[in-house]
Amino acid sequence: MVLRPVQESDRAVLTEIFSDPTVATWWGDPDRSVADTLAEDEDSTHYIIDVDGTAVGMIQSYEESDDMYRHAGIDISIREPWQGKGLGPEAIRVLARHLIDHEGHHRLTIDPAAHNINAIKAYERVGFKRVGVMRMYERGPDGTWHDGLLMDMLADELRD
Ligand SMILES: CC(C)(COP(=O)(O)OP(=O)(O)OC[C@H]1O[C@@H](n2cnc3c(N)ncnc32)[C@H](O)[C@@H]1OP(=O)(O)O)[C@@H](O)C(=O)NCCC(=O)NCCS
Image (cartoon, rainbow, N blue to C red; front, side, top):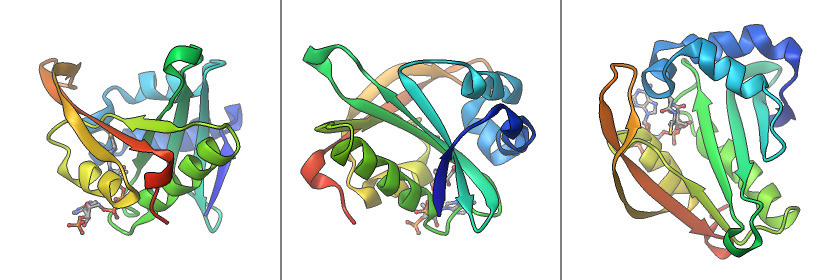
């Protein structure tokens, strides 16, 4: 597996990833997700998850730049048929290791929908712990609000 920075030429493959119904159900409007992924943002970095030359998903980090609250957040999506094979945890380990060892972060966060059971299992596999439920945190594709689960992981909790 290789994580490589997203480029404008990845627009078509990003559209495929975000249009996968099993991804769009959590990420919402595919066009908005593609635009957000390709937008210039100095605090965020987006990567294509490449497995043997196939773009199976996207993973991104957001780095809080305020020194008092310094940490990094991660978001990920793997498209079918590559889900459920441990690729999500593997990609998160690679990015988490980079954020800890090279960017000097002591704490990472991730915030799945509270009912995204598969995502929560995958994140716990890497070492993330449940902090608490953020009520009515996120609006789903159907327009209704739902709870989010804040999870975090300290540097020495990352599981290889
Ligand atoms: C969430 C996600 C990143 C996890 O990555 P992954 O590589 O699938 O993770 P794992 O292989 O460790 O699977 C985690 C669990 O989900 C289950 N699972 C994942 N995809 C599944 C699928 N399509 N059908 C059935 N079960 C699935 C696995 O069996 C595993 O359960 P287990 O621990 O009981 O065996 C990935 O499934 C994904 O991107 N899903 C769609 C979009 C999404 O939810 N993004 C996250 C938004 S916060």
